[in-house]
Image (cartoon, rainbow, N blue to C red; front, side):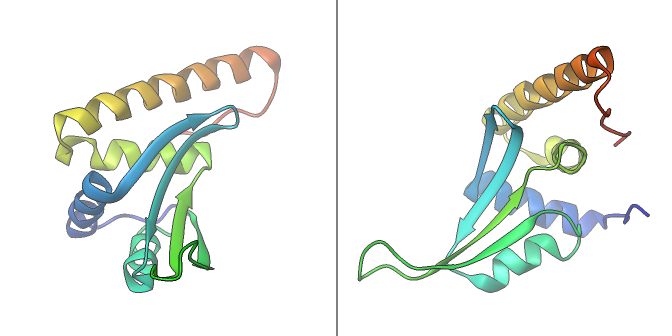
Length: 123
């Protein structure tokens, strides 16, 4: 069952993603990643949505750095749903990045339908 996302949670997510997120596209698909030294912030990213994975603590590379935690969303359906939910609240630069990623996700859906591999379900 798909969890409904609260409007306040979406606004909070958009604020964190605007300032702290890495939107990227890899050969395996689109990925949304936030890395923070605040474990509570990382856990709060996952709580309202129920999506993504949390890894950490990751040992710092330098002695004066703190351990970090990582929230990553890489399932196509989850990435698409997250991007569409926060899009209206994002700045222009992030909107342009999201538009590129959603275009790539749409292309993946079309190519999956052509070659018979499982399709991304509706978002």
